[in-house]
Image 1 (cartoon, rainbow, N blue to C red):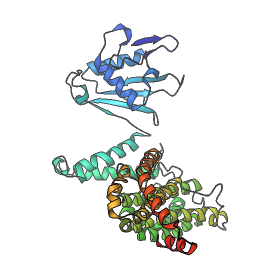
Image 2 (cartoon, rainbow, N blue to C red):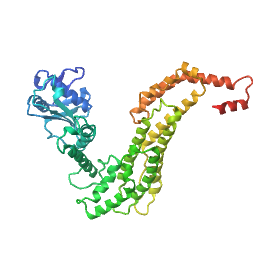
Image 3 (tube, rainbow, N blue to C red):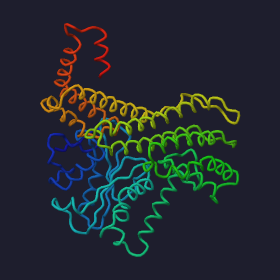
Image 4 (tube, helix red, strand yellow):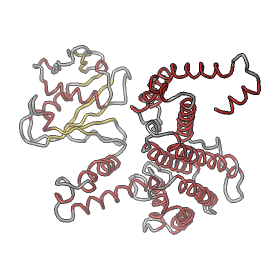
Length: 454
């Protein structure tokens, strides 16, 4: 139910009436408005009881819904005023848009009148994040290129006339280059802006682009050339880390250490920025971690015998630990003293993602190793009676090596369920060991032999 908040001069939609949307000005309920509001509070993550709007917004909403010539409605959340009252302003078009605002928009695809039945089919819902260029790049790269170019089919490249497919690929490359350069009103490279550096190759291409840019001064081109030269030994290897074996990743990390040392120690003014190096180290760690995750998640780690997967798990852990060791050595030892440039300032770099991923890999390895050891203590008949083959089922519901803050609770739940299922097995093993160790004729030497067997 809607009422007017006199202190705020805006409409308040109360919780508890999910299917009712009251128009300002006393007009009748309109289920199309309810649809729009539901979209807004869902996309902008606004609790319904905190949602606010105003009469101007209502007029824009009505015009969008009823005027076939109005194609775009934009909703922008205000970052001013009472934080407990989250106000959203609706407007026709994009006149209220500013980079970085929390927005979403609705686009009509037809002149057909909007109804409760067709609004979800005729209206596209989308949003812009950070900047229009960044949003366009991600939509093109992650949605339209795969659908239109990479996957093929009738909705793919053959559905595009002439050079449209090539134009899309060129647009993707151009947008990516713009993001690498850093989006500023002035048209030049900004090496303090790392928003567009999403992969290690983006950093390599940034300096390659800058050294050849007609917009850059000779001094900037020379500086960029030295940075590009420092990265050239690893440039080709950084293109696709997921295709490399664990052994190749270890070799690359060794080569990468030399390249980073050369990059940091380049005798140029100004030197390579520390803030940019922190970002670059984080980007590399993320790429390495994703490569390790992809390889380990492709294994049937819970269905296969431990002997089949143990080597791969150990190698994946070794890759993570190797990168962590190198970055700590560079930022805590080697770069603390420099004859060419200023020393590394502040805390040494430690990548929390790779550190936690290494811990998860180690945890999986230890769990599989202990489980394998327990199985050796029981007969085939006992394993069948105890249904040991079902104990790993909790882990099959998750991707064990996909570490982030949101997967941690699911991992712990699976681990707890596994331990519950293993309790009868562990009790049986304990009884077996107790019977072998503590007999009337047992002695220390015999106990040692029993332990050696297992």
